[in-house]
Structures are given as C-alpha cells and as structure tokens.
Length: 396
Image 1 (tube, helix red, strand yellow):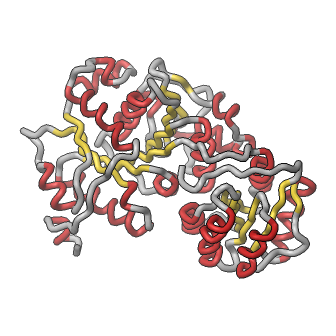
Image 2 (cartoon, helix red, strand yellow):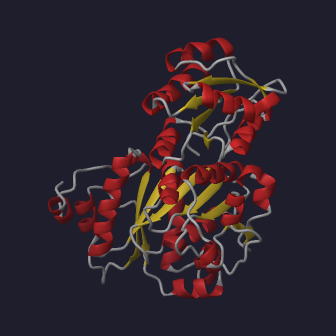
Image 3 (spheres, rainbow, N blue to C red):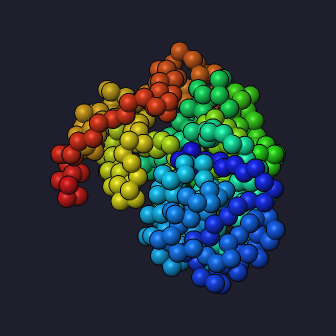
C-alpha cells in the first residue's frame, strides 16, 4: 500500500518530534501521549525539521497541517529521503479537510489525525511505531476497482479478481460502496461485523479485530462488507478509510477495494492510496464518456498514470456499440484488458459463487483469469492524446 511503512524503536517510549504546530496543539499532543512518548519541550519550525530528524532519528514525526499545509506536504519526502521510509509520519490538523487528507496521503504520511477527536488514534499510531519490528515494509497491494457508472460490473469483477488471487494469496475484498455496496450478497455471505462497525471502533482496529469482522467464502476470499440495511450506511471521513485500508493491507497480500461508481470521499481516498486503480467501463457511449471524465478527475487529483488500468467489461465484438479501437482513440490510452459478455455471470451471482466455478472454460472466466497480470506489476498502457469525439467535445 502506498505511503504505509512500519517504523521501529528499541525503547518502551517512542521518540517523537513535533513540527509546525502552535502552543495549543502542542499541549493537545502532550496531553494525548502522556508518558507513551518522549516529546520535545517546544515544537520545531518546518525549516528546522530535517536537521532535527537527522540529529535525533525519532520513531515518529508529527507535522502540523494548520499553519502551512503546503510546507507540511513538501516536508514529508525530505524526511523520508533523510532517514528512510521506515520513519512514521503523522499529519496533525484541527479539522478533517478532504483535500488536506489526500495531500498528506500522497506525500507519504501514514496517519492523519484530528485532535482532540482522534486522541486514541494518535496514541495507537505512536504505540505501533514503538513496537513495530525493524524490517522492510511488507504491506499488501491495494487495488481500487472503480466503475465508470453503475451496471458495468465493478463488484462482479472485484470478487472474481479476488477469486483468481485467493488460491495462492491472502485476499480481502473491502466494500467501499457506501451507497449500494453488495459484495457480501454477491457471495451469499453475512459478515459478523460490517465496515460501519469497524469505523465506529476505529481506535481498537488491529488484525484481531479485522479477523473478527470479515466473512470467509469457500473460495478463501475474505469480505469486509457493508451493513445489510441502508439505514446504518454512512460515508466516513477519508482518514478513517485510509486507516482501514492500512490495517487490511497489513493483514492481507491483496486488498481489493470495491469503490462502486461514486466520486465520493471513500472512493477517492482508496484511489489515492491504492497501488493500482482499475477503471471499468463498457463499450457504449455513455460509459466511455463517463470514463473520460473520470480520467480527467484522476489527473486533477495528481494520481500517477502508471497506476491506472483500463478494463472493458461485458464486451462482445459482434454487438458492441464501440470497438476497442474507438474506445482507445477517444480516451487516449490503450485498453489493458477486456472481459467478455457471458451468460454464466447471472448464474454465478444467483448461486453466490465465482464464474470459474460455474464454468471454468467459459470466455468470461478465461478473461478474468488474465486480469491477474494487471495487478502484479507488469507493463501498463501507454498514454496518448485523445483525438476522438470526447476529446473534441470536452476540449482536449
């Protein structure tokens, strides 16, 4: 998972440096951490942070985002270049601003805490930094599955991609569609706890709690699902989504995040921290037009194009409204994979099973098997300038 690396300490109290905060925030940090951390007498200015980290080699650096967010973002890679990526960086703010949260994640901050509301989260972050083993990052890969619109098969592909990985990897599907997510229903599962329960107990989140919250399918896919009733669904803050994905990526080799088709804070957060972003479209004008807009949105977020994967689902060469060449021309990038329209899909959903278990020789199952290469680090699509209808229509 991007920007998530453990740190280590040989003592029982973490060595902590606090950067760029005022006296009030410093007092909140001191009150929150108590005897769990060795704290400086006063906070350090942004401009002195690199030198201080070079001298003291702390376990944790807490950086304030209220006074100068841009300087706080700029500081993160400088600190990691100075002492290595194992340093535990925590962003501190008085409010949960989504843009600041995403900027902090992209820069490399491991946590984003709001005091005094997130006092327990800060204590847990420092505790983890103190007792983490001094080893290289072994977090799993996070794959964000994002549909261009509803009905393109995002949940189906997320589940079946997980099914292709599960025979040899520990895999969890995290349902981040807070509108109509139904990953558990697709697999006929009833998780003991929902992702909403996890958010409500975020201060206690660890691998043991996570294990007690997931449901396990016969294919060995683990599912962290949405509540079964819409009444208890509430979109969380981006920093809480980040924390759940961080914990899940420590427990699993692959985390498949079903982001649905919404451009909400949860899905944008997942895309920001994901190792791969799989955009799913269908070969029709409305879906491809929405895909074009989504790609523009991703570009504005500053997310790296190298992480993007484009999949055309429900593809039938004979009946498709748009050919693959049409789609590539209009979007300005190569299609990385196609998944055929397959009559066995509905049967697999009705039976709560994987497509390969309905008919492993069907065209759809074979195509899904090939999707694995998209999230195992192989070469991605080349970019080119859009020259088709949407490029002209929308000013590119």
